[in-house]
Amino acid sequence: MPVTTQIVELERDLNSFDPLVRSRSFSALLALADEGVIECRPFTTASNLHCHSFHSYNAYGFSPSALAWIARREGIRLMGIVDFDLLDGVDEFMAACESAGVHATAGIETRVWLPELAGQDINSPGEPGVAYMMGIGFTCSHPVASARPTLELLHSGAQDRNRSIIERINARLPELAIDYNQDVLLLSPSATPTERHIVQAYALRAETIFRDPAAGWSEMLEDPCPPVPAGTTARDPDVLKWLRSRLVKQGGIGYSRPGPDTFPPADTFIRFVEESSALPCAAWLDGTSEGERDPDLLLDLLVTMGIVVLNVIPDRNWNFSDPEEREEKTRNLHAIITAARKRGIPVIAGSEMNTPGQKLVDEFNSPALAPLRQTFTDGAWFVRGHTVMQHAAGMGWWSDWAVHHLLERADRISFFTLLGRSTPSGQAGRKCLEGLDKDLDPAGVLARISDGRNK
Image (cartoon, helix red, strand yellow):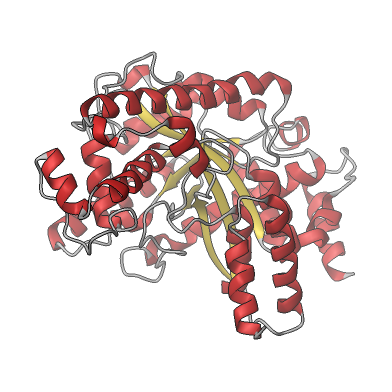
């Protein structure tokens, strides 16, 4: 078999639902890279700390191992996965990144009920009181016993909402009815599908019913579907986006307006993240909603609730052809970053990768993002510092060691940022921190890392 064909097949197998196939393919690709058969780009400080894996819908079908390999191949030093309502990919991703020499972070995303803003749209358009929220800096797929009930609640709540959406759509479109167990659950390797999986399942079903699916959708929904070649609606990003808005989002036939009982309270989720020794993280959209319009008020509220980090998706805040929209969104982006800096809140960036066309790494050298690049880089180093310290020594942000030695929030942020930047990747970094004497002060920890790098 030609080497190029072998590489293509190995990279394809990285996205197999079989973890053994993924593991074997990943090891083979790393071996080819070590032998120089595959040329990998040198590592830079490029980062993407918000990539959804195939556990919660990646537009390219990438598994946690695939994302770790892509980071190695493309020279992306800091890479992070974030999946909806589950932590199933964390162990695989952490291990793969360690083998590949990539700095890893891992998180979870969900929607929560924020009673303080119950009458306002926040970052989930058309859903007052509902907010996307994250936890970042997890180190394993299995949280401590006290945190498990909340994780189970997130999972069961998502399943219940999915089934309700399908019931409503099936009732309106009986000729396209799908079965949740057979048509949707099987699209996710961990049987934890999202709304995007539901849309995909209906698009696939339509291709078996209609000779021209786009025309069929247009007639059924009484709205013109984006034109595409016959039979390709289930793969066309414009059609899938259009279907999502017509089927599951506000105004769609499967939509039901959420309320206080639809999603867990924000403080319940924040407590779960803290109990898991991870970092509660706010997710910011674009500053155009009532709840996001005043960045100072929003961040003051979130910090009071326990938020440690802020996450933004830069590309949807500057990359527009319309100059007025680009100017407004860029201005809002800079305003929220300024407000975060003023409060000492680390900021991380990512591209999500749950919609076709989203970037592997943001264009940090663009005029809109260049002034923010250092902020995003420092935020990535901070989360990485907490992650590696918690993973190797159990001495992350919430540990008794950190609380004792780093009383001031600013000092703690500075330490973990420097630690993230200083600690080597892979097993070398973990060995620098394993078995740390809890009596060491922060300077002693950094000295040990320096000694380890020089050996």
